[in-house]
Amino acid sequence: MRYWLFKSEPETFSIDDLANCPRQTEPWNGVRNYQVRNMLRDEIKKKDLGFFYHSSCATPGIVGIIEVVKEGYPEPDSPPWYMVDVKLVMKFPRMITLEEIKRHPHLPTMIITRKGNRLSITPVTKQEWKVVMSFLI
DNA sequence: GCCAACGTTGGC
DNA sequence: GCCAACGTTGGC
Image (cartoon, rainbow, N blue to C red; front, side):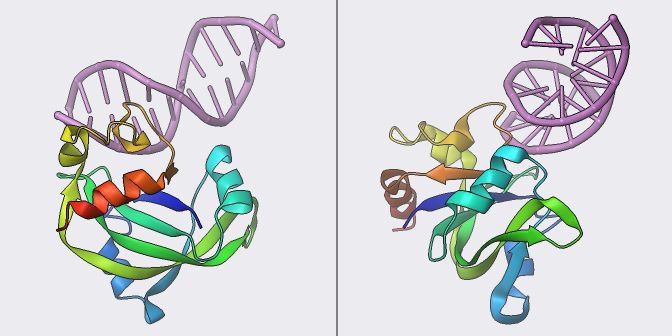
């Protein structure tokens, strides 16, 4: 089982939008980058977990956890592009901000902290996952 | 196949 | 709104 980070602009699709979907499940669609397309098609598996990250907003950060419930399948009518279905696992009681993540001594390894990173889905190590989760305690 | 121009992303 | 980073496009 692997861990990921899924970026979304909350103005387009926020964690509350997901929470209000039927069965709290939605296709993660609209990816138009080949590297991420390949991850969606080949690497992201059922039962994988992902952080839900809000980007391009006043305070960017991680707001919750989602689970992959359907593996990569083609977007209807958009042949080269793929999506997965994700289900809300939990919304965090508070956002873990990008600033906090950058400040933490063990997290500068996270791809999200790299300037110019433009991949909308990035892998997260088990170690990184555990450290981020420890912020909530 | 190179590379300049352009468009998009995303933090600030 | 600015700008750095970087993917994509297209002329050569």
